[in-house]
Amino acid sequence: MALRPGWRAFTSFAMNRCSVLRKAVRSSGFPLLPWGHCPWRGTGSFLDPEMKAFLEENTEVTSRGSLTPEIQLRLLTPRCKFWWERADLWPHRDPYWAIYWPGGQALSRYLLDNPDVVRGKSVLDIGSGCGATAIAAKMSGALRILANDIDPIAGMAITLNCELNQLNPFPILTKNILDLEQDKWDLVVLGDMFYDEDLADSLHQWLKNCFWVYRTRVLIGDPGRPQFSGHNIQHQLHKVAEYSLPEPTRQENSGLTTSTVWDFQP
Image 1 (cartoon, one colour):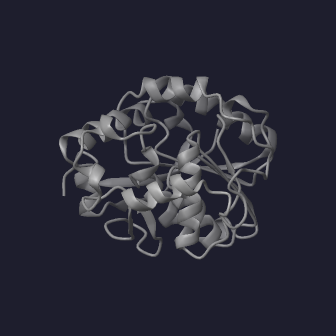
Image 2 (spheres, rainbow, N blue to C red; image 1 turned 135 degrees about the vertical axis):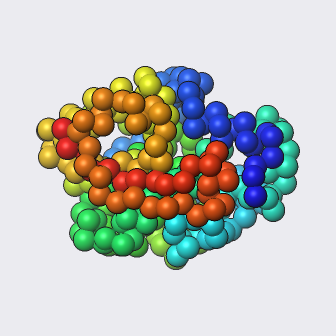
């Protein structure tokens, strides 16, 4: 089912130039959380009860219409009240975490199908959103995981999604990681993050440094957005998997039909 006008505008906004979100990334005043620590660490008991109730009331638990039916997620769907409302009536920061974007779907599918990529390794998920790719890494045996998203509500949603999938919540960092000193990771994953030219440039430089300093492997998921396909990072990519998107995902993403996982090799 296609999105109603309010949410169609919202998803189109994220798929194209998203300068407002980029500015939010740069100016966010969220507290810096030390590596391996976060307000939602552990059993989820640190979730704000009112926000937890709000998320449970205004999202649907679903595993349908994506590349990863084995992962349950709380998402905005046609069964949710705010699906039918104007996007500006949502009372919090734009809920990018409430959409299972196609790049993240491809990454998650790839990790589930290829558990050796993450088994026993440390994994950083940048722009984690709903947390699906980090959850896929956990399901596939990753030893240490950090999910990074600048929206604290995304952190709460990730914790709820971990619990839906019978996983202990992993650490979540709600700070712009591009502004922090880099840490050593075996694998960095990021899906749907190349939606803005300036952000793409910043990510490219950060990922190159991560690769050359720590020899970190980097996997990128993207459905072919112009800011990614037209970026000079293309000269440093190796395609590792391409997936045909399910029809519901195609309808929700302006007719995009495939999503690809790329290995970054600068």
